[in-house]
Image (cartoon, rainbow over all chains, first blue to last red):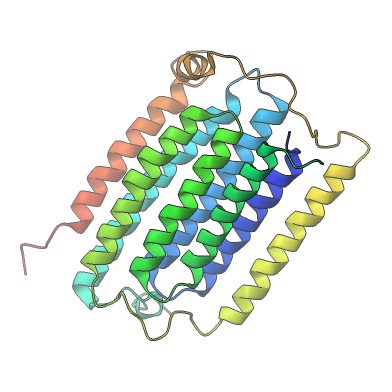
Length: 102
Length: 176
């Protein structure tokens, strides 16, 4: 059987990759995709801890399902915002969205 | 740790997940990044199967790969002209790389410390087996008033609100 820490390492690496994508990409859709990667890293951790520590209850899987729901809501609203901004400004580069910038 | 079939499968899915994720972050072509996101999400679904959560794996394939990834591909196609950027990264990408690396190192330090800690070290074997009817238990837990029925209903309201809001935000302005 695979020890728990290996799943945690995969989750940590996935989360770090997502952090880099959010901070470094210019395209807003790419930033959204990186956020999905980070949510997936969290889900790996939730399910791994559930499997190894409390497999008799359903708490870990239930939390993972709520993370799914939040991810769907976030993707839907985020993409709608991006499409609306693209209509107005013909750009989805995060640096171009500077109307509210001081 | 001997090289069992389980370890090999874990390694394959872990590599698929992480390589796909790196591709998403680094790909120059946005459409290619979206397709690599599908690959990475598939790897995560494989990890869920290894963790004895087949329902979550199915939800991952149906909802994440079938729903969110397709939504993102639609987003990519609706903002065409942005697919092939001459400059993928912003000016602070080197700082971002440092921050991501520091995040990873801190998480690794915590994992190593806890894995070797005396108090309650991380188990290498699961504490007991998953019940054979775990999917039925999960379904019951989600609608059980003593467990998750309130978060479940709040999640449905959140989802309905988010989707109606998304349609409202993304529709074309008739006034102009």
